[in-house]
Image 1 (cartoon, rainbow, N blue to C red):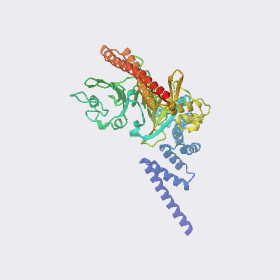
Image 2: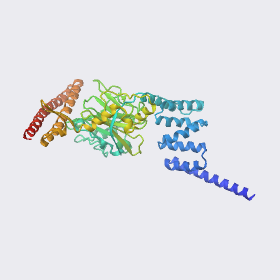
Image 3: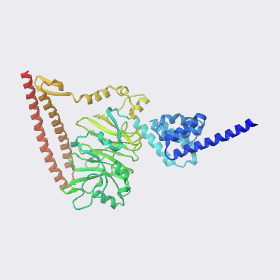
Image 4: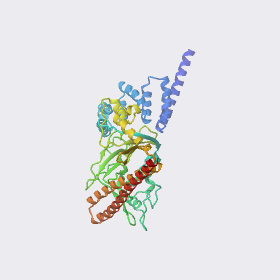
Amino acid sequence: MKRLVFFVIAFFAFCRIYSQTISEAETFFNNGSYNQALEVYDKLLKSSPNDLMLKYRKARCCILLKKYDVALPLLEEAERRKFVKANYYLYDVYFNLYKFSEAAEAMRKYIELRGETLENPEECQEKIRKAEMGIDMLSRVENIAIADSVKIAKTHFLEAYRLPKELGTLSFYSNMSSYEFGMGIPHRSGSEDPHYSTLVAMGYDLPDLPDLKQSAVVFTSGREDKRIFPLPDENGDIHLSISYKLYDGWSHPTMLSDVLNSSACDNYPFEMADGVTIYFASNGENSIGGYDIFMSRFNGDDYSKPLNIGMPFNSPDNDYMLVIDEMAGIGWFATDRRQHPDTVVVYEFVPNEKRLPLKTEDPDYRRNVAQLIISRKAHFNNAVDKTEVEKVEKNKNEINFRVNDGVLYTQLSDFHSEDAKALYLKLVEVDKRYQTLKILLEGKRREYTFAESYQDKEVIRVEVLEIEAEVRRYAALVDEYILQVRRAEINAIINN
């Protein structure tokens, strides 16, 4: 009898401790302390390894901590044991593991099992649409060569971009004020800052826009004559705006284009040197998840419909700020996939001259490439990838300089004269500026062709004349440096 009483007391004591521990885990979960909640569920599962509810709750924690591989077997077991809600969360796991077909099937099954009790049919159908987008994007993964990557604080990620000033500058909104709306755009003399006025007129107060302040990026053209940046419209949606430099300040910002506007937030703009192509990020309905990178071109009347540039650039997480330096043959983009909330990874890649589809029948390899989960060996499996990456590393030392009709140098080490080598390096810098100016000139000539008003054409005409003069000056400098390099090197050879 005493033994029975002891076991009864022990049982109720265990139940009390168990319920308290469950309550503690739920409190952690509801407060967003998912790691602490996960620790509690792990402890409970050691004593109750077959408890389906504990496994389900652990899986929920793992999803929010982005530990999808851990959550997958737990939810698959719950689904086999007819736990209806498991299919809803299996969608999230499959989706983030790039198993988009399985994700769509899990959501369809969830809808079927819920039947008339389904509370969120529109949300569920939207999830299926996103999964179908993923299926399509995964079938068209681009094969790009990654040259480097750097993990960096989200608030400083622009420091990883080595963009030449002549191609433009990128900057965050600085501290907002009634004079600067945080972009370093000076207000017109004797008037209030136009951006601030715009916000006030819309009924916004600057403190109401903390996210915009912390994450918005301003692109300033290489000639510092225009800026593209995000601003809220009258409905509170964030769209790309443009402002032009005038004689006494900057023009009032206007929306860049209705064609580019999404129903959500558009940010992180970069305009190519041609003045026609623009890259930006948006988290609207055509994004597979979070921010996706889009591309559009100005066709004379307006911008073309934005094109999602696909994988591996885009993912179910946030991907943004794609920048390309055509002269250097290098590009960058940022992503927070598999990262701590405060950090991002900026990838440096070699842009393909033409889109290069990934050719593989291996679904796991395709998913790995799409997610940028690729080891050096796997990445270099394709000879094109290896060649392109090596090209980036070797560009610093590989040259193509003809000293005379019979002598061609292909390495910096070929030079006999240190003076000639120094002059050659200066020649490279001058020629790079020369090539960039030619690209800028081509872009300005396009702008002139498509300008609508006489006043706009006159402003652009003056700019074209200025750039043409610079092109001629740098062309002459290139020729002069070539002669100086040859003269110094030939003298060194003769004297040796």
